[in-house]
Length: 129
Image 1 (cartoon, one colour):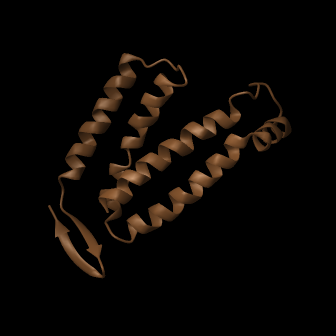
Image 2 (cartoon, helix red, strand yellow):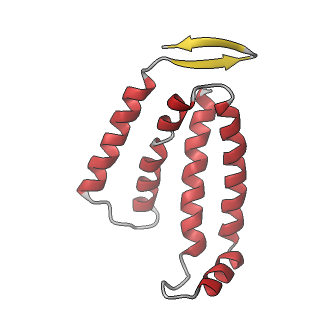
């Protein structure tokens, strides 16, 4: 379950960053048709779709083994990883407000991760601390 949650965060980060790369060269004032055409011509679009498919499969496996009320908030860490990658590799502006927000997300995830949740392995149910 821990591996699945980490993989969910990694895949979600990849999907968002690669989506951005897929549309990065399309002008803001492009028509809908030009936007769709430009996106479909980008190899990043197909990478995003592949990562999205892997993300979907992984998420179904995670949900089959733990509580949604535990797993979903943990994946909020992807907001922080997307912010970091956007700043480091896409040269986006990381403001103090964004850093405070990221810190609050991490604090929330820390609280959620310490709550009891149900996990199942090989068909058994147990409460994890």
